[in-house]
Image (cartoon, rainbow, N blue to C red; front, top):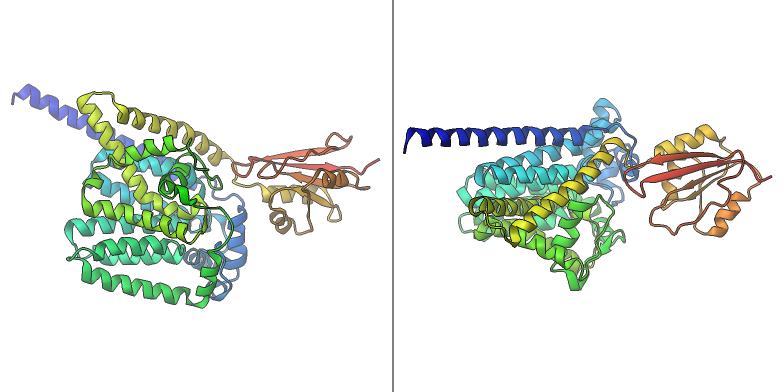
Length: 483
């Protein structure tokens, strides 16, 4: 090799290293900023319920009271302990979700960088940082960040166990599985399914069987005070069931696609039209070199497949956030699939179907996610606390409040006075017909539209509150009495 060519290669390697380091710094900065900005805003509805019914009520209520899905038990216990030390704080509680999420993203990114190359690590970090769904839920005072960290550690430990049979991998896998399932009970399905993959390996069978038995036993004790409630509440009606005709596509159209496009509370209705998107993403996922190795393929797919199949068989209602921890293995496959396609294209410079799909996926995801990130950075998730504060300031306690909103009970709790739900034009007209001052609140989300006929009444005052979720706006009218 000539000195000139060696020097050129050295410079190319140095340039690539500089680009990689710069990319990690930029993405890492965005990851931290996006999870920490605005943590002092008022609680959203589910956060408020978690804090009100479990964190403030203490460990006994969390562990022994009636179980509801809002109670992510391990998170509630950590928030209760934090409150006992530093007092109640939106920032302190939300950090128990935001910081574990950041740690989980770093763990998987570091593993991918070491085992699969810098491009895979960068793409995974990009996906986890910019995903609208993860950006929404991992900043909340709830357990989704903890579950993501648990799944990240559990997945990496399981992958490493197959590569090196290191003594540390199985205990770490079992501890992470316990943490995840103690936060979200449904996590336990993926934990056991992935554990079965390790048990199938002769070298890992005995330590995994022992660790898995101990972890499942500990989880049984953890949930024992209300195990019947956990099982009963799994029949809740929020979200949608996985349609039997589409169960094969559910990991993509009910878990992966919503995380790339929407925030929480948006469900994808599978159909013939969605098959094109499912097929395109399946082609990218199938390009992952990790699927060429039996152990890695089973570790990254068993938890997803068994969890979705279990929820389908039991006809359980689900929403994308319930299964957000499954994005760890799915994003690993998506990142490595994209990296493989792009690396192959850079070498051959042949424009085929896969490079086009990869480029289109990254371009569309970037456009959508940047828009969501901008809104989430500058707006609250929900404005219910600001709405209540404005009503208290603008109208005395005796003023009747009518609300054309999906969940009037949330406003009622924040306001501290009765709120009458409005669902029909006749009820809205009755609100306008009140003889004295009246407050009307409207939120254009999941309800049939009802026009406020008296919004232009002389002396009416209008307040608009922007938010990035649940219809994007809430309107408050303070109306003088009918004359």
